[in-house]
Image (tube, rainbow, N blue to C red; front, side):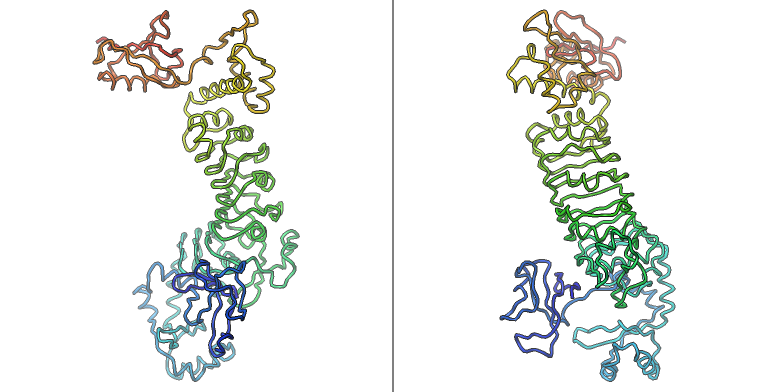
Length: 602
């Protein structure tokens, strides 16, 4: 039961095996299956009043199929040849001298001996009497298109094994969607792939976690394993002490079960995959209870990808304080997450967690984030953040990069505002939405955020910027914009009230009064515009070189010949604009400032 099959290209799980009782067909073996694609089914496991099995939630996702028509999948090493060679390569074919001979008469004479280990020697003796030299394999029986049995005979199997051993240099292998259902005899895979480091087994027919444990216990060099899109049953205990107790007491008697041999191996589940550093478990219908049972097998994992699983049962997530201590990357994209506090309580104390990916979830806000001491990268794309206040909740993190793309607040406030707000709120961040912060951008963003916080308060309280209650603003900022308190200490108050003039204010720092954008007027004295003022709207942080490049195209003069000077106000002096790293703000630019264009004298 619960094994996986393929029929007409669709995958399903076996829920029943036996005769069709409702049609009195006792001489035929049928399978009751539940389809992965539920709309493929015809019933819920009950047919004409007879219940063969029960589907999940009683859905009509079940069918009855003839056993002989379904595909039970391939062994792992068979899938290797099927994918990469489509058939056994000619050079191997010559060495193996594989021949197929129909053995109908032989099988009929010894039908009862085929599955009996004690009679195996008798079968080999009979074959030798016919002077047929083969390496006998119990599993080497297949069905032809005409439902006839045939046996695959392997000549020179020792030579095959030597050839397979040449795979010991292979370090990466992908067998995605190859209908792999079994690992093969214990030790065989390990003897072939002696140096495998990266193994991809996505979308196959594995049905049990113990198959995965059998696999990883054979591959001591394995570093990265992906088994995404495999539908595995909840981890079985096989009648032993409940696994909940095994996990947390670390007792060694919870052993791996080998389906090939039908018995437990003398290998504990605990730590069987301790060599694995990257574990990819995407789209496997897992919950936190399942993962709690799995973690002990992979205690040293550094990257854990759990995307597209429904992980909402955080009350069931448990792991020992010795597990996940090396975890650096945790990807919980599209897992139904609604409350960040669950993540913080579960993983916030991990000492090495550097990257947390929470894209495509249902987050609307964040609690105050005080854990995650090692966190450097946080991704919150495609969530439901509509207000920017959540940014001040992560201001204490020592983030290097932050990604907040495709959230409602971007449409509401604009990309520029969100970027500047994030830069100002998270002092350590160096990359926002994949774009590095430039040299002067942090200063401009902090000043912008400082002023906008004041302006937000003025609008809310319906007061003027030259006459307001500063202490009331500070109380407001502590709740809504705590970062502003720090910025006032850094830059000063941009709207200080002059106590001697009611209704007036002083500009304590000219740079704070510089607008984020300003409209300048370009006066061309030598080019095609010829003294005609041309207005242009530019950011105050725009560098001198980009300004020269823009003007060069505007007046049709080579950039190397252009000389610029600025007159900030009508009564100000005209000052030459020099300096490789200077910006418009550095020259004190304001709205209606004049930039004069001349040519450099020869």
